[in-house]
Length: 114
Image 1 (cartoon, rainbow, N blue to C red):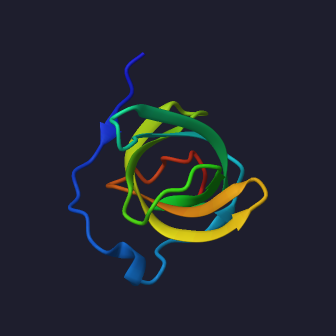
Image 2: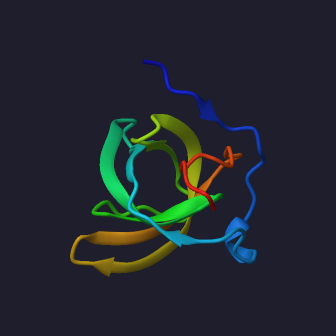
Image 3: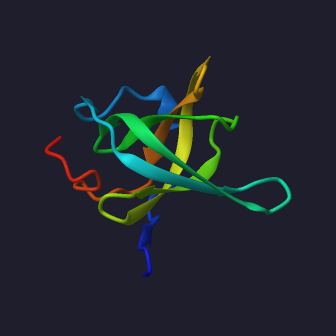
């Protein structure tokens, strides 16, 4: 099965803007994928904690920096979207909190009324 990855918008410093869209606590299974410094592909499955039309908050064990680029796949709808880390929160027992912004997302990416 081929996944469609959208990436048409120019990236900017979004983390300085006010939050866009309504947030909703929602546990959606996702896969995050990125290349490490040796070009090895890393794939991690997690669940969102909060979603909005433009992104989500997830917790993963890997430590990533701000503006780290990755692919995020909604494992319910099997749709993927380019994404970027725009916020790094606290380290919790289950991993680091991250705010992830979707790049040029479809408004129904989460399959929820937001």
